[in-house]
Image 1 (cartoon, rainbow, N blue to C red):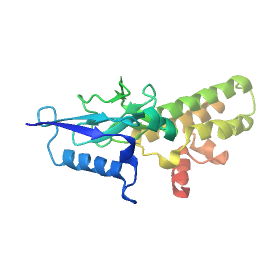
Image 2 (tube, rainbow, N blue to C red):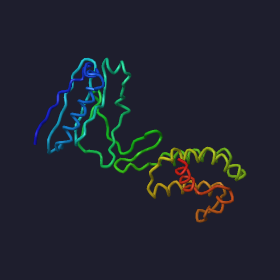
Image 3 (cartoon, rainbow, N blue to C red):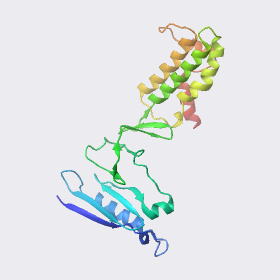
Image 4 (cartoon, rainbow, N blue to C red):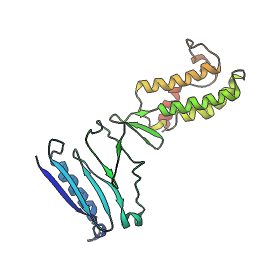
Length: 233
């Protein structure tokens, strides 16, 4: 077991491409990454730490489990290049494995928190598996649907009620479905939400199938919409 300490120069001169065409900062990062990848880093194995210095660029480098991460930038260099990371809005997540139990990473002296799911471009991704969490989409769908039903009430024309539901609720439910990576239970939750919508509009019993209603309403089942969207994408 070894204790390795890295002292990294983050001054502005490192960023200069001298000789031309050579990114010295990237060379340093590649060296650190290759070094860490060649040894067994762990809590009970080799320990690796990094200290940085420089007047124009300050970086926090954390190395754990064969990974090196440059997480924060500040000072004159960050101001000049408009590089800003908000520690309160930054989160950490691991794909392909569970979040590490011991891995403290800080940004500008503030700790970053490990989360079980993270939102990226409107899609919630789950830790480890990378599957899509559609809980928020289903909640938005029910919220919009309940608002429509509160305004139109149960005594309005069924087809009149179905039109705004298809126009406003369905897009909220299937937002970004082209990039979803779902498991069977998530797909079932989406189908249940859409079928419950038809049951409430047409006052059907929960034991009854809504497939005939969807057929006569000229609308396919929800999983068919999801599949079609993926094919078009």
